[in-house]
Image (tube, rainbow, N blue to C red; front, side, top):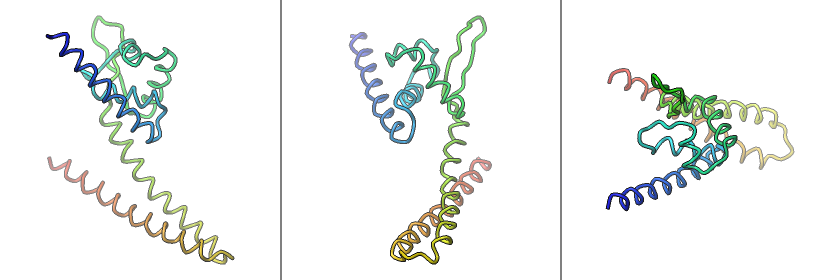
Length: 162
């Protein structure tokens, strides 16, 4: 009975890793990088050594190494060690992931500023229809940027109170 339950749970974990991996891939991560991140989100305990990750994902050493290097350099994953054990155990760096998410959201502001500059360059354009449509995007972009900045600020204030 336990083997069946364990097998069913492992299958659910594999399915979840695949679903989340596809999401992270569509969000800009390389396919295996997204799956490594997804696996570290759902695995128990919430840290795994290199070989456990490689075995679960059935991926090459170099591919797993590259994925972990990317996630580590972006601050989304870090590692811990245990006394008497030379292995590194990789885990989600929740603080780094949160900061990474905030930075990505704040890039909306930067894009809005760049698009404002583009509109200034197009002020005497011979294609006013395109400039008008582009202006709608700029207005929407700026609206989002203000909202995102405000939401992040409000959230951070609530976190300091808690």
